[in-house]
Amino acid sequence: MLKIATGHSEDPDTVIATRDALDMALAHLDGLTPKGALVFAGIDTDLRAMVDTIRTRFPAIELSGCTTDGELSEPEGFLEDSVVITLIASDLVDVTVGMGVGAAGDPDKATAQAVAMARGKTERDPALCIATPEGIGTNIHHILDGLRAALGADFPIVGGAAGDQLRFTRTSQICNDEIVSDAVVVMLLSGPVIYSCGVATGYTPLGQRHVVSRADGAVIHEIGGKPAVELYDDYVQSHSIFFPLAVHSPERGGIVLSTPQHFDRETGSIHLVNPIPAESEVQIATASRDEIIAAAREAGRQAVSAYPGTTPEAALVFSCAGRRAALGTRTNEEYTSLTEIIGQRIPTAGFYTYGEICPPGPEGRSLTHTNALVAVLLGTRTD
Image (tube, rainbow, N blue to C red; front, side):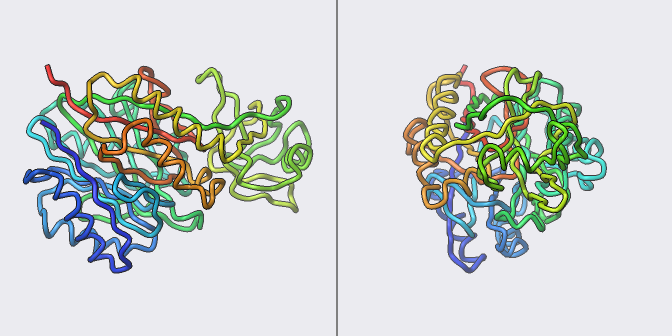
């Protein structure tokens, strides 16, 4: 048996919001005691009060989560400055969490610590990892490499990097009683768990490919021997996060998107969310709001068609903060479009992230994504 329920509240008082979200989730657990809780919270939430409220009520619960760029749930849809709590109860599946700090400086060590802590609490075989790492100052590619090294190259890892409503100043990660930054937090589901994933962006590259001629980590200085910003001047006459950079990736057989954080008009450089190596081939990418919303339906269709069971017990959603910024007042349409495909009654929780993680399809190793929507369906084997 696996039972998952969600609760969501935007009450400005954190304690009241946490209690309301807990009560809402518990009402759908049919009297079962939760083993684990996954929490997504607005950046201005009093995290200490939220964690204390949950852990006082359930002292033994395994708790993980992070701050976000916006929260999603089946009861309420898209909200900001709110608290989403997902409770997990099961007699077949163990829920364990772990944390490693110093993710920016030593992602291998941080990921190894997080996985070792979570694995040390269960004798069952891990089946799925839900990761909520630091989203500022870290390299999400290196974090995923570390998680794959600790769990296995093809072990399924899903999740999203913590956000802070595009302030890019500080995010927080939660592991049981601890509230930290610059950390990797994981939740392991161990036992007969089944899952499926879908991922889509809706973005299309413009024009011909161009070669990054000079780059330093996440800062591109020159493209085609010219100041990087000139590519945007030539194609879209705009320096905007609404136009991510499409990076051609031989590993994927396609592209991965990277969102600009800052355009330096004096130096001509572009500061991006993810590092892009020199010699990479890039194009500016664009999408209309309708295309972004349609991509949510596509991610849902992929997940539903790949699900190996009958009816999923729950869904998780990780969507990029860049998509939320581009959608503006239509943000909730992305979520409602997804639920039209996966079902509107299934318990669902998620958040807007600074980088998404999931396998690219029903099989294959987990990859990082940007400007994507990731849909994950969860359940247990019945045989």
